Length: 249
Image (tube, rainbow, N blue to C red):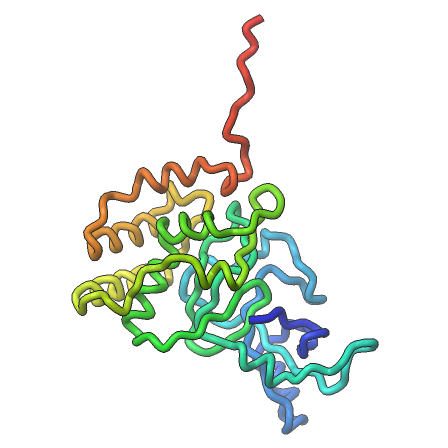
């Protein structure tokens, strides 16, 4: 997945789909990019994190972009088809601010591109795909993510493609039909429910329900202690693990 802005083949303007459709009625050769955008303003620059809208695992595309027909000044014209070839219906977090961001992976009903997400293409069956998405947003997945991340400043972190490729995940292909069915049912029940910020996983009822579904299906112990330990991790919270020394004067 790539960031879509003026230099990458899109015009960087967030238009509602109906407005774009009206514009296309006068441009028969124009076509749409479906996109999931993360806290951007109309000029394509990062807006305040208060504008962040991705709060559930199941998502709908929220921007539509025209491919460029002329290169931006001083830049070559990129092939929009090459950009669109990267689209997928599962997106994985690329940059993460855990104090506000809530999910590590999202699902969509059609292929999209995103500005702070990596596209992930899979040939899994729909039920096993749901099981994987449930795992990717669980506390165990967050633990693996945290160990593979590239820390930048404070709690800011990035996950490069090679790190995602090397990160251990649940092998949903070898699960039994009963295990897959149970995890898929849990996904259906939880995918549209809002999660708390990643740094607040210890008080997040949806994250707890995901963990409990995995524990039940895989025979794992209660993951509450893991959530409590991760919630105290300075790399997630941005807070120091050491308090101020007491003044005994």
